[in-house]
Image (cartoon, rainbow, N blue to C red; front, top):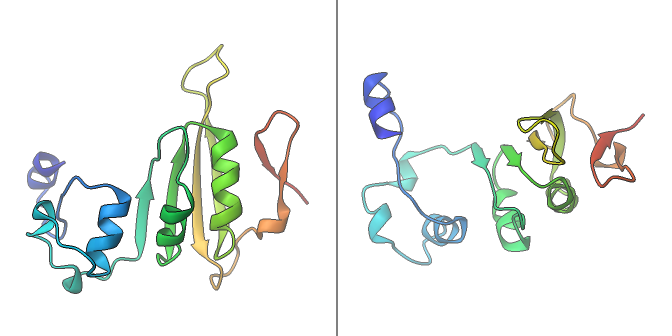
Length: 142
């Protein structure tokens, strides 16, 4: 990522490899991490977060942390945990867009991409319009 940023003359980004839990502790001032010493969180106006959690999903602590962001881009490889995480995230955000990607044809594997926007934003899909299908996948209902 740093090589791509430099090659494209992108200067308004910093890179660090930390867990979501570590990032939350650092942003809230609860703990300092050596890997984040070069980042001044006060100088950023963080509004969008990209998450690509493991198959087990986000978990309640990370979902609660994500609620502070205006936009959440969620990439999922597990529709079942995606649905569980959406139950939590849709308390503060609405689904703006949803896409499925069949990157592994002829398998049961499906990648999902979801854009969640803080509830105050117009033209979002309310959480009560998100319904379970028998297969465990999510769909948008009327």
